[in-house]
Amino acid sequence: MVDYILVVDCPLKWHTANLQQNKDHYASFLRRLGPSAVTTVADRIGVGVHFNSYVPWNEQILKYGVVSKKTVLGDLQQWGALYVAG
Image 1 (spheres, helix red, strand yellow):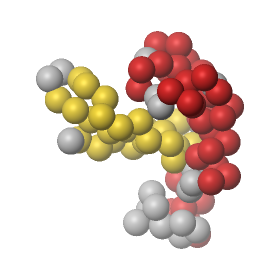
Image 2: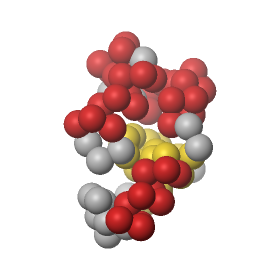
Image 3: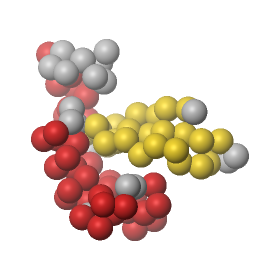
Image 4: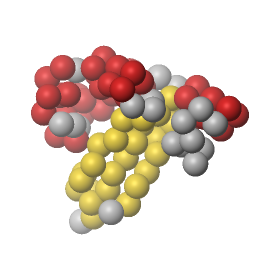
């Protein structure tokens, strides 16, 4: 499995568009709850990164995480979670 980290300006905007185009990438409960729930779970429960796993693409399986530029820069500068910077 190949892992990707996508750094975006606005995760809410990104997940809104991605849920419209690739809703099958998301867990069923998050699909139903919508993009606000995706970003809230990532920010309040997790470390600011939401991962979509086991996504088929070009005969491969990949996993991609979506994180805000602000979160990445904060982690790189202050090592708050060491998740992205780690």
